[in-house]
Length: 139
Image 1 (cartoon, helix red, strand yellow):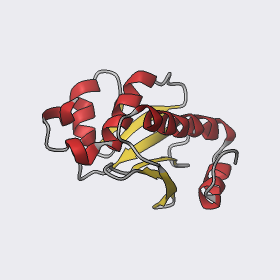
Image 2: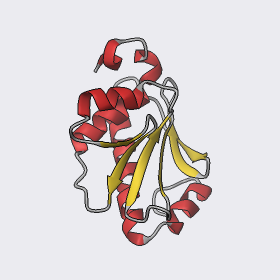
Image 3: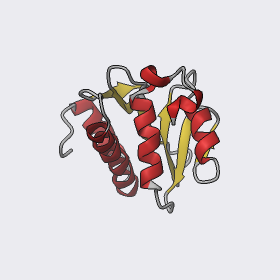
Image 4: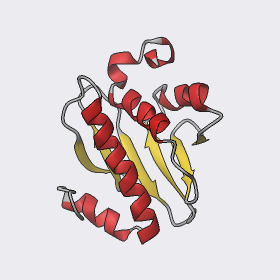
């Protein structure tokens, strides 16, 4: 896949249905774009965790994304369920985003992604360990 250096990650993206691949590649681009725009975020490591494309930076919390054939019309961005991330996202954006428990933001194939909001969530994850003790993660 274009621009994916990790061949194992590229293989996972190649296995997604074309419509979902496009959606997940958009989420991937948002992660990299947000990292470039967020102060004090270093280089992103793109790897697989639990067989899913995953993104981590020093001082941040892992962000994963995936599509599952059991739910063919949805895809998700996953966060560490032991963090305060999804609970914070619910508090701030509960009327805009859909969630799965305390671990994911879930999108339907027809959803228009609220880009600015999602980039804020990504930014909070990429800087999580610097802000985890702040009320609402300093949002």
